[in-house]
Image 1 (cartoon, helix red, strand yellow):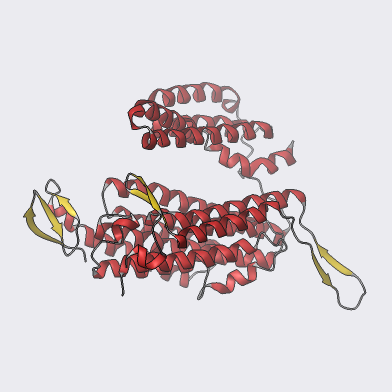
Image 2: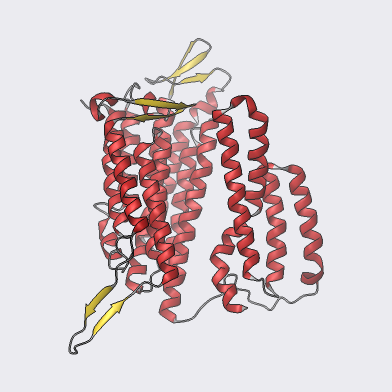
Length: 225
Length: 242
């Protein structure tokens, strides 16, 4: 599908060899949104969970100490920047690399907590994310081998063959596993029991934005209409 | 499955239905290996998934997952061009980073369950041999000098082995944590030097020699100081010891 039909008028592009960055209203909006949220995270403090306990009048406070807070904030910023990069990139393999980086950072965000249940689910999520790297990079490599380019500008003009479709199916499988959307969402929901919002919200936001962008990329490559 | 349609046109062969031009210097045997390579990758991944399905424990699952990662590298390598070579490296790095992150999670979970801490580099014996006090400096100097002579990725790896050997043998006597932090800092600066060198290639191609030297020296120091990566993780361990 034509890029201009799909995501609006092309404002311009930066050719860096084979890597062509292009700017459309769709891209810029997602990019700006990701950057804005990253900025909000950089400025914010973390929450403190307060749980009422049964039988007594006391509360249980779950606080995040200073060093853990710093690591969390750093990882959340990396996650936000990786999301922004995935929104603006014009190269298929860079997109998959950004998605893989988001997956790693998501594991790291919950890796430092002291709750065994959360660590358990983070481990399961990590295993899924690692398995998903096979279809993710494999799909991109299949598309490269069949069309000879990874630039989305080039892919917009390429011929759709069965191998490209197969590569795209692998790619969407990989993205689903790496960002933990359905059918892999169960472990990710468990990970949310950690204290430390709003840093944890970036996990959801990144997968949401990545899916939107992935659909755009798959439409560009496969041209179903 | 991507089997090439063999007809000559402008000194090359076009692949079936696609716009890719395979140069005529590439032998048809090599081109015909693509389909089997993809099949091998997918089958290897499938076997690893079967292994995970029949797993005995979490550690087994983690080790078997690495086979899936290797299958991914097979599929990327099957493309067999310069670009594919450039794609294997980030794929490998991502794979290593993921396995490091997951094994850290596994370790911290087990530590929390059992209530015991483990060393960063657990040694079964007390290796307090005399050679670890006298040899490290000598070996490290030779390896680092040879690595600096080679430059680039290979040189970095050799110099890195020298530094790692020095540090690991010093570990017996305990390494102060600020040495680790320093190594990690140098690593970061070299990394930016490498990136800046690449930027010179793109932005100012006429200064390609400067860019080449910047990136080659940067990657020398960067790979050599990969030990800094272990340092960041090991910092707390050493701080507790000293």
